Image: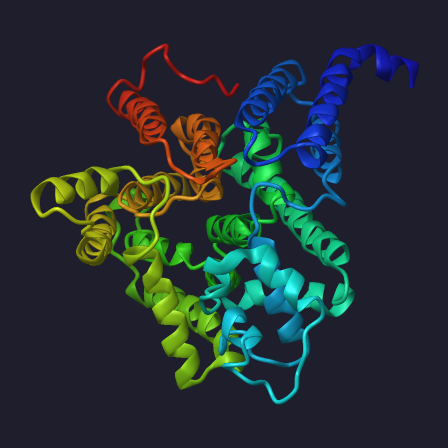
Length: 466
């Protein structure tokens, strides 16, 4: 023990300092206090960098430290997001066998939508916590995501703190799964397995996933597990897990077309390079079919005409009504105000998804995508392009490009995982008010770094992962 303490005294000092900062973040921070938020965030990023720099190869030490950081939040209520109140609302209804997609919290509280005398524990607390905007819309969380909410409803349906602990443990377990399969995949791709700690120890991930209870971690766990099995040629289970990932968050649907050129026929002559072999359309369509079928099956318990109407309408809101931390869209919106004099989100919100689809189609058709590393790179740029064209980019969305970049030669999502904290300046003491100059600064830095990496790959201006 003495030898261990002597060998790791500096990392332990950094870890204890980080724990103190995470404790302050979890239990003594208001979202509106941005100066304190950015100072804690910056300090945690610096300490995370130093921890990885001085403990190369110490897997179990860093794994233990990463878990300890997450456990700091175990009984803390999320302080940067109020979405978890809606998670608890949906989960408590589902635990009672009630379809949470069929009514809004607002209409239920007003008696406009009846559930024949059914009640929900702490209904007023949950509705007040989630806010009027969330309460006025139907649920848009996919089926597998709802199962985690239901688990919290079953195990702690009368306690907000108990429900939060159940959700938090689920997310922590998902992050441990990402650590496990992400490390194995990096080894199989002949990359440094230590890189996975740029996800596991990243303060952005710990705060947004474990701290604020966002389920991108669970979605990414199933996705990276699927990619690992795909690389191992276990196509059936890879497709099933890909479908489950879609049913946690719909985002992986964006990646399905990118597998177009991955499945190749085995040639008798090994002299034919894998990238030039004929496509195996049977495997390709089988993979797509199993993935979509898996995702659809998870929705079967909820299916009805009302569900389809409510779910599709709520998803559409993200493209045509909501605005937050956008980049290209804000420029288009400004042009719209200058030209026609009003907000043109209703029109632009229909066009930008079409452009995203064309971008994904181009990446699927014109990139080689014949290996997991090349697919990860294409996925990275597909999701980056999608977010650049989106009207709403919440901070936790950046988790997806961050994890994907670890399996590529690009590092700009790591920069984004720090810069995205600037979006929290919108939540001031006097209400919501975005500082568009800071939004512009965030994207100038991130896009600039991405452009530099693409066009100057051998430059010294690189984030060193080794």
